[in-house]
Length: 479
Picture 1 (tube, rainbow, N blue to C red):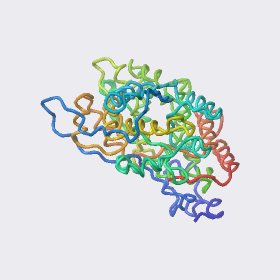
Picture 2: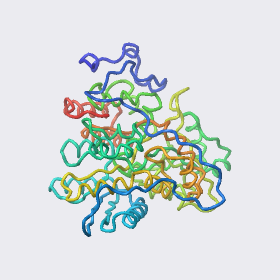
Picture 3: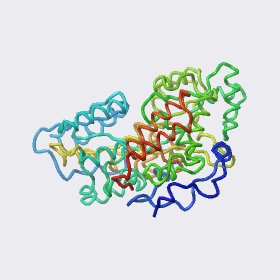
Picture 4: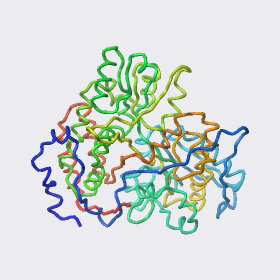
C-alpha cells in the first residue's frame, strides 16, 4: 500500500543524485512500486506476439476467420451514427459495415463522421454528451483521460454484458489492451487496432551520406549533425498534430529508463511528478527541442506536413506512428527506399524504446436509441473476421492474436515488408497513456512549453504536480 511517506520521499539510493546526473545515467524506476489505487497492474506493453505468415501462396487467399452472425438484428431500416477522428480508417470501416449489412442485417446502416483530428472530435463529442444527445451511437475514444472522462460521467456503456454473452469475442482481444480501457472494473471500450511509434527513415539518403542507423542517443546526435551539415533536416516531428504528440518524447525517455510504471503511479496520485526520473524526462524533451534534430517549428507541423517533408527528401527521418504507414507509402516516389527503426537507446545499455498503444477504440453512447445494434456493429468491426480485414487494409497491428494463415492473407494484398517488422515490435513497446484528465492537459501544455523553450523542465513538472494535487484522491481505478 502507498503511504504519505512513499509519495513524498524519493528512493534513498537516488536522494543524493541530481536530475542532470539521472538524465545522463538513466536510472531505473523506483523499486518495489506500490499497487495502483484499488486497481490492477500498470502494464507497459500493449499487444502480443503474432505467428510468422505461412509460405507465399500460389492462388488468391481468403479471410480464414468466420464472420459470425449478430445476436440482435434491426427490425426495420435503421441507421446508427459513428463519430471518429481518423479519416483514413473510413474506407475499411465502410467496407466491413457493408459486408455486415449484406451478410447479416440488411436493415442496418452505419453513418460515419470523421473529424479532422482527435482534438476536434473530443470537442464535438463533449458537446453532444453535454446536451444528452442520442447521437452518436458509437464513439471513438482514446485510452487514458478520454476513457476516464466518458466513463466517470456515465456517458457510455461498458462491455460487461457483451463479454458475458460472447466470451469468445473477449478472448480475441489482447488482455493488456483491455487493461488500458478498464475503468472502475469495467471495460469502457474495445480497440480496433494496436500500433507503435517508431522512426521511419530514408535508406537512400542514409546510404548516400554514409550514415548508419543510430542505436544510441549519441549516435542520433552525430547523424543529425551530419545531415544538418548537408542542409537536410534530420527528423520531421509533427508535434502539432494533436494533444498526444508533444508528449511522445517524454514517454520515450521514461520507457528508455524503464520508469513508465513510475509515471503511471504519479498519474494516479501515488508518486510526485517532481520525482527525479520524471523531471529527467522533461529535461530530455527540452534537450531534443534544442538539439537541432527536429525540422524547424515542430508545433506548427501536422502529420500531412511531416509526410511531405519526409517524402520529398527534405528530412531523412520521420518520427511517427505505425498508423501513418499507408499515408507515407502513398506520398513516396517509386524509388524511395523506406525503412524503420526503434528510437535509439536514451541511456547507455538501455532498451530502444518503442511506444505502443491501442489507438482508436470504440464505445457506445449511454443515450443511444440502438445500444444493442451499436454493440453488434462494434463486434463486426473488431471481431475475428473484422480485425483481419481492418488491419489488412491499413497495415496496422491487430487488436488480438490472429493465425499465420490470416497474416499470409493480409500480406498478399499489403505487399509491404515492413508489416511483419511492425508486428515484431508491437509487444516490445512501452505505454503512452495518461489517465487523469487534468494531468494529461497539464502535460500537453507543459511539453509544448518545453518544445518552444518557454519554460524550464523543473517548472513544467511542478505545474503537472500542482494539477495532480488539485485533483486529489482519484475517483477512478484502472486496469
